[in-house]
Every structure is written in C-alpha cells, then in structure tokens.
Image (cartoon, rainbow, N blue to C red; front, top):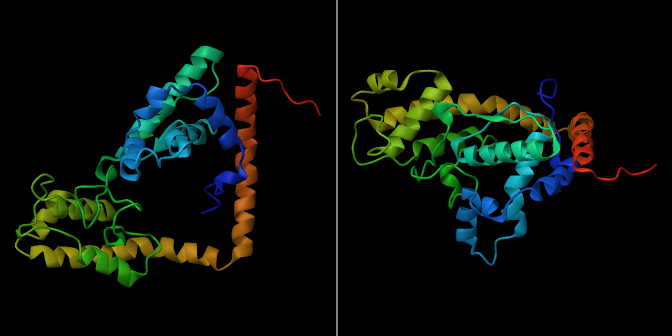
Amino acid sequence: DPERCTLFVQSHVPEHAQLAWVMNCLTGFGEASRMTQFKDKSAKQGADRASVGLFTYPVLQVADILLYQAHQVPVGEDQRQHIELTRDLAERFNGRFGETFTVPSAYILKETAKIYDLQEPSIKMSKSASTPKGLINLLDDPKTTAKKVRSAVTDTDTVIRFDPEAKPGVSNLLSIYATLTGTGVPALEEKYEGKGYGALKTDLAEVMVEFVTPFREQTQQYLDDPETLDAILAKGAEKARAVAAETLAHAYDRVGFLPAKH
C-alpha cells in the first residue's frame, strides 16, 4: 500500500551506494569474510567466481538500514548476523566520528523466523533453491500454489506431530499453518489427529491460496498499469531521498568530506 509504505527502486536512491562505500571503509576484511551467506554462496559458486559485490553485499544492507535511522528491522533468522554487523558498524562509526546513526535491533517473529523449503525441509525456503517446487511465490497462480503445498515432502509415517528433528517436513507445514491462521500448533495436532497428511496438506493449500491471493491481485493491478506504478516508484524515491540525503550529508560531515561548492 503506497499510502502506508514508501516503495522505491534502490538504484533510484544513489545515497545507498554512497553510504555503503563509507561503511566499507570501516569494515574489516575478516569481519566481512565471516558472513555466513557469503561463505555459503561462494562455496556453491566457487571462490574464483564469487564477486566482490557478493562479498560486500552485507555492507550495502547496512547502508540500506542506517540511511533511514531504523530502530527495528523485521528479518528472518538467517539475517540476524547481518543486523549484528549493522549494529557493530553503526556503533563503530558513532564512536569514531560522533553520534550519527541509530543503532537498530532485529525484529524476528519466532513463529516465522525460518520457513523451510517444501521439497527440502532441512534448508530454508529461498528463491535460489535447486528447484522452484519447494518455493511459494506470492505471484504464483492459485493452482500452482496449491499443487506445491499438496506435493510438500513429509515422511513415511502418518502421525501429524510437531517434531522438527524427526519430522521436519510436517513440522514446517504445521508452522506455516499456525502462522497463517493464528491457530496454535497443539490445536492443529489435535485437529488432524488420525487424519493423515493428505487432509493437512489440502486444508493448508486452501489457507495458503486465500492468504497470497490479495497480494497477487494487488501486484497484478500495478503491473497492468505501468504509468501508475512508475508514478508510485518516483514518488517513493523522492520521499526516500529526502531522508537518505540528510543522513548521508550528516555522515559525510562527520567524516570530514569536503562539501561540493555550487
């Protein structure tokens, strides 16, 4: 909802890249090397193929956050480390150059801190997964969404019980179901006692379709009206730049950059 959220394209607000460079200069090589996502992705791609952009991407995220003086950042569990980096760099900058940035904290909902792949419930759901069958896309059509849920990997047992270690697939489905409906996991276990996985998957598929449909329809409305979408993004970028430019100017002044003469 553009009335409640500031929607913009990151590259339309150059202050993101400008502040990222400043924060890069405060980030230790070893510090950046310890970022788990970089280690995982570079291991998959091969160290020789991993780019400097991938290596410094967490620092760009730092700039994304600090530019807007955010107090809390809603993230999944896998991003906790990046928020800690953000906190460290904000405190380092403030300590070295004077109070400039708000030091944010991670806002992580326990129930949805990590949603797992429907086909490989040992790994998180991600767009970079080996197969799209385990990924729920908000823009998937209802039939595709329902099919993915009904095809979710479970186990050879038939008991519906929350046990992430022994039954990761079923536990993942229960977590998603509980989050979307506000129903506690114990209540769901009781509801589906003796009913088997088919009933759980069928009902969850309906719940999932009902949940994502408004997002898909609203997004499609914007995509079908490029002029309105462009106007929303332009207005959002203007609004974002008003805040970002002020923060960047303050940071530049603290560091001692020579201001341009007009």
